Length: 215
Image (cartoon, rainbow, N blue to C red):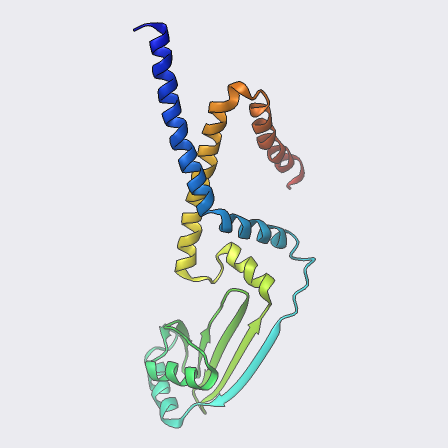
């Protein structure tokens, strides 16, 4: 094989690889565009969380559990004292009708005196406490605002399994975006002399800051 033929084969192979890299790069960038925007913005809000004041909005409600349902829960609590079990379906239905609460099968903390149902959520908190002696029921809902909601979404805090799966898939997509971008840089580096110095600077700056200023 002549030198020119070998060069032509190498250039053709290089063009094919570069084409595939560009395809993977733009597809991954399109898929993680909105997520990258969201995580970049919430990275700023999280970094300045102490400077962004959020006044929580708290709603408290009280009601009395029907006597028959109180008796049923009391008997259930005697069998499950100290356990973490979901509320019976009738109790969940009553909460939904009374407080517009959807327990959704969350586990409650049972004792012979009361049932405590924690319902943490992104950007706030909520709970229900049911007294088993007289059926007195308290509901409290705390909303810390949309910035707190976005911060919790960033951290995957109380966001549910679907969003946690999205974070994992988004992270993999970002890795594909970064790796293909790095390989594309490698292909073009010969004609762009500042490529590797800029890449090295992008690595060096966070490493130096981490070593010198993070204690």
